[in-house]
Length: 482
Ligand SMILES: *[C@@H]1O[C@H](CO)[C@@H](O)[C@H](O)[C@H]1NC(C)=O
Ligand SMILES: *[C@@H]1O[C@H](CO)[C@@H](O)[C@H](O)[C@H]1NC(C)=O
Ligand SMILES: *[C@@H]1O[C@H](CO)[C@@H](O)[C@H](O)[C@H]1NC(C)=O
Ligand SMILES: *[C@@H]1O[C@H](CO)[C@@H](O)[C@H](O)[C@H]1NC(C)=O
Ligand SMILES: [Ca+2]
Ligand SMILES: [Ca+2]
Ligand SMILES: [Ca+2]
Ligand SMILES: [Ca+2]
Image 1 (tube, rainbow, N blue to C red):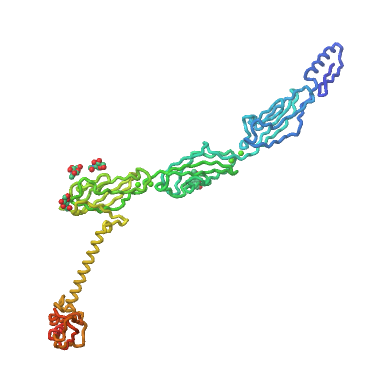
Image 2 (cartoon, rainbow, N blue to C red):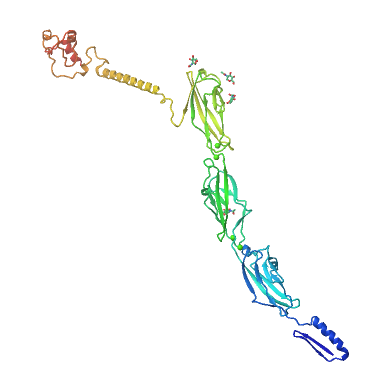
């Protein structure tokens, strides 16, 4: 009887055999030695496990990085040890490369650790000599988060917006990108960087990036294009920037304005078929057609057949015949090209005067006056005023005299009696006059007024001082008249 015991320490054979079985014994022993029953050692991992590796995600741990080298030993010197690993999660297998012979564990060349996807990869590895298996041991790769900047999808640096000139508060529009960010639980904040010509015109909602006008934008006074740089920042302070270029289009929000009403003077000799006035209006809008003006005439007025309107020019159609009127008033309309259109009107008054030339005048707010422009007119006006004043004064004087003396003009020779003071002294004449008068001395009349009898006498004579002691009847009658 043969008893074959195979165990780790070798082969022990106990037998109680018969000789004829001896050959059989040898064959069996040979078989045991050559095959399963030979003595074998199991590979043993050296080092301490589990191994925990903290590795940064993404670029923090580039592809091909050596993470760990497995080392197992086998007492059987000739045994070749092969390593193999399994992964938890199983998808992690694509992230790592294991060299089965060297036991080196690398990150895969084309893959990256991603904290946001898996925070930990457990790698269980065994070593085998082909018969016995050592392990498993655990290598844990713990992925560390790395802050990543937000980015625009699609990638962009400039955004364009177009909108009509608008009041403050108007929504400007939505950028054509969305924000991407690899980090978990991100919070993004929007802001202007402050650069760009339009920084003061834009409000950006800090939580969702909506942009609105912070104040009125008047295309009619501003250039129509502005830039504003915006920035979106994540909770780690990482940011992305883009420039918004905003274009404002002109809308028809301003009416045409006539400089003035027109007061015109047209004469019978004003040339027919030749413009005698050109009306003009302005429109404050920035662009065509909002600021283009078409003029037209409102023909619903009497005498309209006289006037032709072409472009902005007014013509006489026929020579003015004063028999058919001397005063016309009509309206000229200025209509801009916007949609809807705005209209302004001005009044044109035409009156006739008899002159060989037509004069046009405008009643403008600047206070232009044809009259004061002409110094000759002013001079004539002043002279006329002086003459009128003199006439009025003279008339008043006459009236006063009439009221006081009962007649306008004094009698001849008594012109100054009115001014003679009321004398209490008697007028003394000393006769005989003729004897005391001496030639060569002027006759001195204290009232500068010679009574008629004496003035007649003194026409050709010269007198010395005269004392009149006798009052002639003529003089007395004069005095009583006063
Ligand atoms: C952004 O937020 C403001 C105020 O909270 C809101 O009025 C607006 O509609 C939001 N915009 C978007 C695009 O969600
Ligand atoms: C003015 O023009 C009209 C039409 O254009 C013409 O019939 C008329 O003879 C012209 N008159 C003068 C005075 O030129
Ligand atoms: C109006 O003006 C245009 C150009 O100024 C001229 O060609 C046209 O003959 C005028 N029409 C009339 C009716 O005067
Ligand atoms: C118009 O002109 C003619 C000659 O050109 C002249 O004889 C006539 O007096 C003028 N008429 C008036 C009202 O000025
Ligand atoms: Ca981020
Ligand atoms: Ca991250
Ligand atoms: Ca306009
Ligand atoms: Ca406008």
